[in-house]
Image (cartoon, rainbow, N blue to C red; front, side):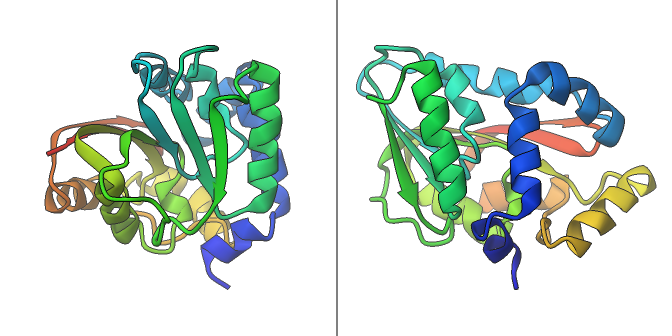
Length: 218
């Protein structure tokens, strides 16, 4: 069973992750202790959503429980597509949208990131938070994300990196044992893939075992 199938079947860890990530007061110290990472960077990445003008389109993949929705403003007038392979995660995203009062802008889509049912250049922004390590082929996932982004569109992503060193090897081994981690990637690989996909202005920030990247579709 590959990692996508594990997530699709709603592994118990999905509930734990959703509970924690939706509560910054809990997620921040936990991420610092377990991964040496400032999870505040993840929450800050969602701010790019709120900066988009009316009529823009956002793709959030994998949307998980909808943590990125904290960046969406009420009455912003944008199209927000929350995509995930797991039906349970899409249901959690719908509930998050209700809590934030943004259901009128949020559309959910069940799909595999490697074969998304969207047109070329359909989106202005893609957010993929703690996502690349959940994909069986992260390079192919980035290529598909690049396809659906318009020229000049932006990417905001984060992932558990494979070049984090011995300190985080136990977490990596456990993640593979539970089927929650795919092959993931190191920071050099992600830079190379983004270059191959035509991204420019790539900015990468390492925070413990996690890496955060922003890039622009050329």
